[in-house]
Amino acid sequence: MLSFLRLFTLKRIKKHLKMYISLMITSKNRKSLFVQIKEMVWLFYVTKYFPHNYFKYRIFEKNKDVRDFVYYIPGVLYDFIRNDVINNQAYLNLVENKYIFNKLLNLSKLPCTTIYGRYVKGVGYFNYDNEYMSGKDFFKEIEGDFITKPIKSEAQGGAIRLIRVHIDKNEKKFVVNNKTMNLDEFQGYMISDIAKDWSEIMLEKKVGQHEFLNRLNKSSLNTIRIDTLRRKKGDVTILGAFLRVGRSGNHVDNWYQGGLTIGINLEEGCLYEVGYDAGVNKYLEHPDSKINFKGIKIPYWIDVVNKVKQAAVAIPNINSVGWDVAVTENGPVIIEGNSDSGIYPIQLNDRPLLKDKVFNATMREYLKNTKFERKYEKYFNNKY
Picture (cartoon, helix red, strand yellow):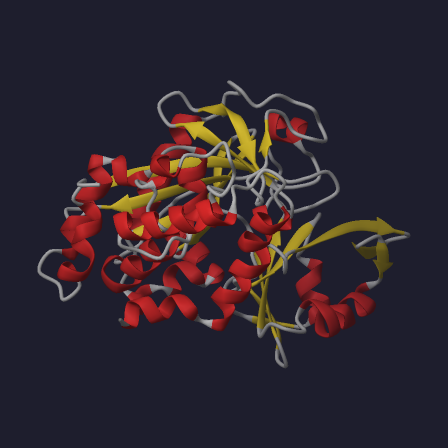
């Protein structure tokens, strides 16, 4: 009962009303209300779970057969199980704190971003080695464009700022949203705007991406999301992967900031034919660059997969992670990990996970001999 009640938090209700139910209301291709209610009841009866997927996958449209979606595990259900038995909540900071996460990757000799340091609200600047510095000395160390982002954030890309740096008459200038500032002005902007809603801000060197990603969209860092699930005995399985590409003018690739996702064939390392936006609208090509997705090969794909698997082993007790990986001219760079990575885009861009034997077996492994086994095991018995 408590698990069911967790579905109805105010934040979750608002999200579904705004994004998913509004899609149904505005759709010109939706089924009759009677058919929708009938199908939702059927989906609830068969899957034994609240039918979130009816809205997320736009099953309310006339060209969708509800029977095709019974093997798509609801994202909220996976979140609950991940928090209850897969990821040890005491270790979440190893992934969710971007500064600690980067330190851990460096210790493991895995390719990661260059972090200049942190700004702590009300205190000041600290370099990567956690040494306090004046703002003047701190920014002397910064060369070239950089990114500011909260140390911990659920803002889904909305809190990330791109800062461009250039020298004008021997003075370092900072450009944010086409506004040019000197050092004193930028430090004031850091306090009044960038750090307004956050206690700590990380300053990260901008990653230069591979030319093929620039061709798709050069204004954003376009990253690969790979979801891994580590089994009880330590071997790592990849649940799926997709490329995230921003829209022209945007500096982030996030779905909820207007970006697109395109599934990646895991064996071949190339893009599938169809991409999606957050509204589940389909795209065969990037709407701005007009480049077709089908068959595009991801450079360094084998290296990308190997580095992610190594990172998955390096993070203790966090067994389900979504990895954001940039591809540069010299190979992959791990940007960050997400212990709460949504399972929805993996299934949308690739396949329903409840048809995956390894996924089902791994879920049963984690549930076995726990107080949650009886509650959740019915979802992974392949008996739909």
